[in-house]
Length: 49
Image (cartoon, rainbow, N blue to C red; front, side):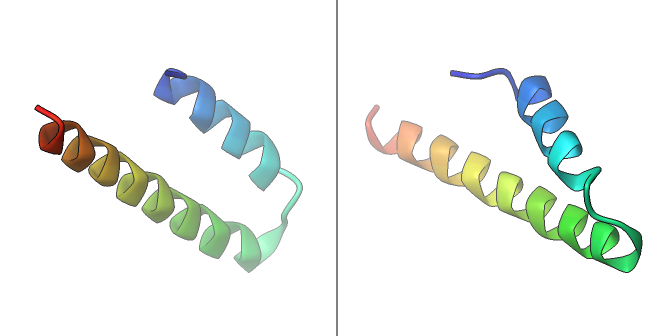
């Protein structure tokens, strides 16, 4: 499993190409997406216990 800091660096590099207001909205959407993925991973992990 890839450490979260590497994911954040990867997404920061992607977001660096976007300017202005789009940067803010993209950052919010991507961070929300990361949170949802983490919650799903944790939930699935408990289901398999």
